[in-house]
Image (cartoon, rainbow, N blue to C red; front, side, top):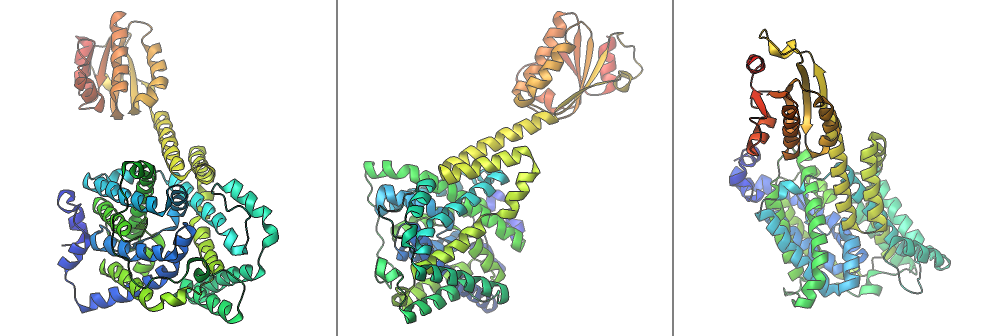
Length: 549
């Protein structure tokens, strides 16, 4: 059964993993070979990136590998996207680092586990489509804001700075502390970070199919080791990496730890749902498939619970690795499962060598990731698009950078809703028309006036429309209100029309609403409004008969 046929039957397919679909289509050696090559390609990208994200998040690099292995496997095994690759994501660096600073690694594990439960519940309740209603300016604003924060968090390791009192979390105190420590710059660290960036970008430009991230890290690690450069490494800060996954264990669950972890879990859930479904939509656009958002949320939830049990942290869909998976020729979710197993294999085989990786090299790698997250072209385009979009974009971006990620998303979403309401209200129009256009040849009252109502009539447009309708009701006359072009009416809009009819009736006038099966008639009848204060007419002839009665 095809993706499209399953996706067209939400009741039957919304909680069916894409792996089931792929296996039903038929799966053999050619498909396995394609998935194995794609999985190996993605694993090569994920290996250094997972460690870099973990270090930037304030935890050991091994936890990034645990997250990529356990979380990545479960996302592909159960996910609703055919090509989604799960693992640690740069978007979570800010939240995870703040969570670790406040609650410790144990609190992070519990928050991740609770977030997994929340995500799974969202999927089971079939709220996946609702989460996708995120205004585009909000998405660009928070993604770009995260990019700025990630880049600022890597300056210390890029320049080999030594801070006297630790690195502050908020960006302005952080930049002030980094500036004060400018005298401790390590030239070797600057050279390693810059060399990593140059190598990666050159390989991307001239050999785009080569594993640029891994090659950049490997080359600068080799140079730093051979020249005995005075730079901090994974080994000097974290010691040797483990070669196997730890035994699964539940985080400490008490009333106190749950209370401390819940706010972080809610933030992880909000960001994880948005990021994973955004990644799934990007994969749909690249591959022509349709993902199942509810099943994807369930898979993300199970993956987060699994990662927490094995010492990992937040798992989500990763856009860059998912795109790499598609470009590498993946056939389906098996490539993501194999990618996790390949990362596990790398950890078993080369864990001792990872101790030699310079931290400035990983900082340079994350600097590239952060720069790419700042959607520069889209940001500039939205600033030029309209004042409303620019306002939503800037508010989201500034609140994310200078205040809080979750607050930025919520505030941007609310502001986007207000901008939409205003735009919809401005589209509602009330214009005077010619009586003969709608009444036919039947006798007409001498003081008949006709109005055409168009657009959405709701609480946002009532204030403007109500002023005009009040003027209409000033003197007794027959009013014919054509609502055939009204697209939507809420209870507030229906009440406004009913009040117009009451005002006309008190002055000896009458209101007839023209428009067969109109949304207005349905909304008013649902509230018990209508006769005897006004009458509904389905056709012009019916309206003419009512007026001549």
